Image (cartoon, rainbow, N blue to C red; front, top):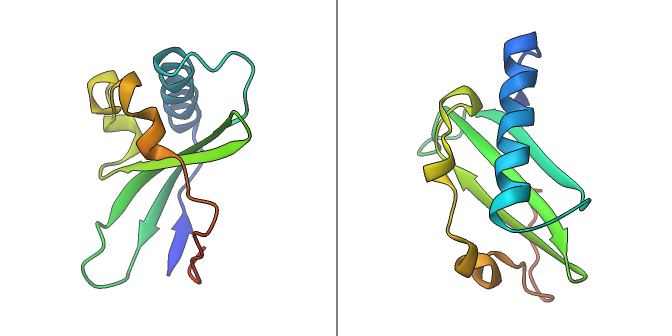
Length: 97
């Protein structure tokens, strides 16, 4: 089960900081970017992870960083040239999300 974490001013600032790093890294301009810290109680799942999604060229892209959003650094983001690999395939189906 996933659960969203608390929203303190520090947490909100960390979300904004990661969002801006993603915007710069992938040259997204005004594209919508989702950054969320989620807790997971499923066995084998990291206890807290940061989930990042954005839309570019008509496709959704997403990735996770396996640490709390406050601990994410710009170096944790994939390189810009990796953007194509982050695109969700059209036939992708997931029952969990």
